[in-house]
Image 1 (cartoon, rainbow, N blue to C red):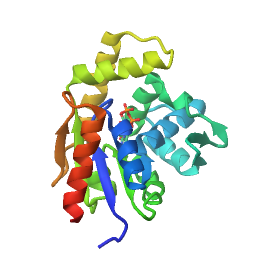
Image 2 (image 1 turned 45 degrees about the vertical axis):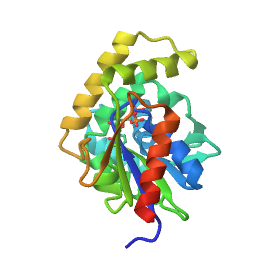
Image 3 (image 1 turned 180 degrees about the vertical axis):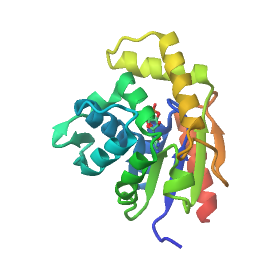
Length: 220
Ligand code: CDP
C-alpha cells in the first residue's frame, strides 16, 4: 500500500470541487492538485501554437514539452504568468475538447503523480479516483444540479468583473458535461467505491466538513 494518502475529489464542471478541495487540503495540511488547470494549460498552449483541438497527436507532443509550474498560488506556463488567462470559459471549453484525447491524458500522468508528496494530497478532477489515484483512501464524487452549478459559476465570473449571460453558461456547462461523460478516454463517472456528495443544498463549510468526517472515519 502507498504510504502517502490521497483524497480524490471528482465531479462535473462548477460543482465547487476547487473551493472544497482547497479547503480540505488546508485543514489537513495536505498538498492540492488542480488537475483541471493542467488541461487548461495545455488548451492555452495549443491555442497559442495554433494547433487544431482535434489533433490529439500533436497536442500530446506539445503537452509533454510545456514547462508548467505552480508557485505561491500563481500558475506559470513557459515562465509566463497565466493564472487568469486559463480561467476563461473559452479555454474551459477548449480544455474539455483536448482532454478527450488519450495522448494528452497520457502526457499528463507523470506530473499528476508528482503531486503525491507527504503528508498527503487532495486531488481534484474528473478521473482522480478512477485512473490517476485508484488507491486513494477516500473517493468523493462532488456534484450539484446543472442550474445550481451555472449560478455558482455566474457569481464567480461576475465577482471577477467578467460579464457573462447565465443562459450561455448553462448551455456551455451542459455541453461540457456531455462531452466529459461520454468520451472514451477516462470519462467523468462515479468511480467504484466513491461516495457521492450532492451539494445543491449544502454550504461550502458543510461540504468540507462532510469530507473531513468521511476521511476521519476511513483512517480511524
Ligand atoms: O473549472 P471546471 O470545473 O469547469 O473545469 P476544470 O476542472 O478546470 O477542467 C477543465 C476541463 O479539463 C474539464 O472540462 C475536463 O474536460 C478536463 N479535465 C479532465 O479531463 N480531467 C481532469 N482530471 C480534470 C479536467
